[in-house]
Amino acid sequence: MSILLTCRVTIGDIVYTKISGFDSESSWKNLGDTATLKLYGFCTVLASDDDTEGTVQALEDLVQVGDPVTVELGYDGELHTEFQGYVAEIKLTIPFELRLEDGYFNLKRTRVNRSWKNTTLRKLLADLVPTAILSPSIPDMRIDTFRADRTTTAGVLKKLKDDYPGLCAYFRDGRLFVGLTYTEFTSTSGVEAALALYSFQQNIVDDNLTYQRKEDVHIKAKVVAMHQNGKRTTTEAGDVDGEERTITLRTETKDKTVLKLLAEAELAKFKYDGYRGDFTGFGVPRIIHSGVADLLDTKHPQRSGRYLVDAVGISFGPEGYRRKVTLGKRSSH
Image 1: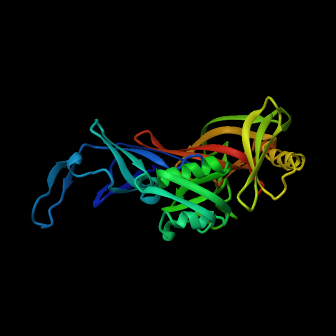
Image 2 (image 1 turned 60 degrees about the horizontal axis):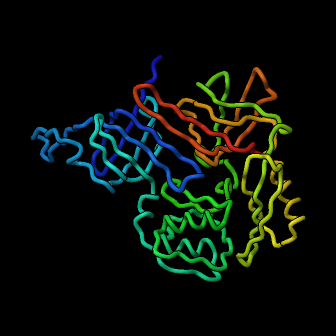
Image 3 (image 1 turned 90 degrees about the horizontal axis):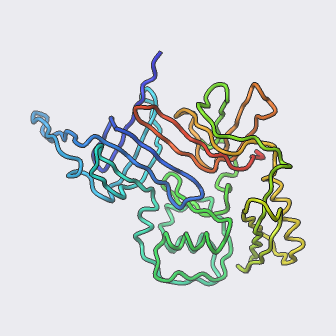
């Protein structure tokens, strides 16, 4: 039984069912998803009159920066949308290459020069982008003052991440989410590709994973306490020689001794017996970043477990359809 790789790529009004290659990177750590699409250099454009033969045209005459792009991939004609965005750059190479960006593409082109006082994260974002593209999961986090001088909407998102450690910002299915890491989903049930089962003995092709015990994990944390009035209190916690992380707490206490205790409880979530690193699976099952990968190991059952996903990379082409999954901390769900 053979499995056929199939795809449908729509660029503007043009549809391609054969491509030379596709690679993408998606992570909550980045402001936007990016991808590279490789196409054959010419395509046949059918005339509107069915009796008239189509003409062969070079892609550089048909594709422009800013054209909307949808990439659907799958097996045996069962397709799933893997990327939605825009043409950000055109490279006249062989094969013809397009660099793609998701909704972040438009945010880099919208100028911003204003300030806010006594507002919330959602209200601030609603002043910058249409409410229709804002995720319903954005929290009403209090923001006391915020100033954006001669920048772009993308620049505002970057400044929010810099000013409020622990915030992430990314697009999902055309909607912008801004909030604390891993909080987009209150539950993975009912969310497409938010939970996937992977077995070391069945559908993991390759891995770059290491198994560590919690006593061998050392973490040094910068602790940022976010208060309702928009102000912050910072301190440090954890191991002096450890890997550096930022712990963001929503609390009114300014007592640094208490904050350290609270941070140590958060750090405990990163100190666990489990895997670190990434693995590569087939195109299905599908998994998205901030979702949960359920790992099954029948040879070593004690090493099975659920992990939050930090990043997902997709590759599609003559070599096959693969999904590279980078694990985050162990999931409690």
